[in-house]
Image 1 (cartoon, helix red, strand yellow):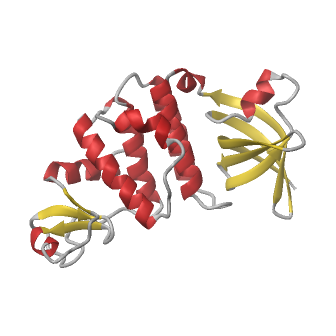
Image 2 (cartoon, one colour; image 1 turned 120 degrees about the vertical axis):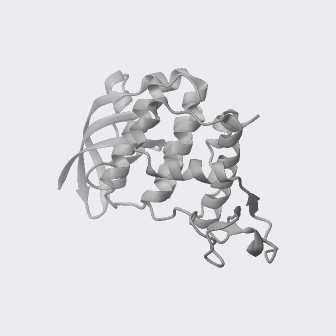
Length: 250
């Protein structure tokens, strides 16, 4: 069967025998692993079509759960991302995170559109790259059904004095319930931090084109989010963290 779909290249790995293994996030079929012999022989357009940060139009042979690339055309190459180390680190983290979080062969057209928007906005963004990364992380949690409970204490249900966040319990704790917890993965959180996360959740992603949060708030939210995702979504340290560390370091 010949499949035809738009896709973003999440990852490319060179294998033996002149084969490239691609992780494609497709609009129609979700994430699939595709074998390709394109990109060899010095043809720049073919090389670009199978490189990360590329949005392309792909024709793929499907046979008993195996996928082989028939042809690929570049729709949009976000090449400017690779020309800036901060943009490259931020976008690499988001691609790797997306690849790890989404299941194989599960169509997610809303998330696919959001990833395209992220790449578009990141290519044009001049500063505060961490804001876009945070917005993407918060929204992917929401879309995958892992968004933490922020409106009431996860232990007693009260909506008062929500001054702490429990990574293990998956949401905010009131001051009274905090006293009964011995867990080390509990953070003090100010009201404005919680409200910032809620704002990220409800605001359309494209509006983050001109939005930037305070750097100190971004650092704290990122630290909590990374602990939360590692605990609840089984994500080990991302390889791209070394590239993106400067985004959130003081």
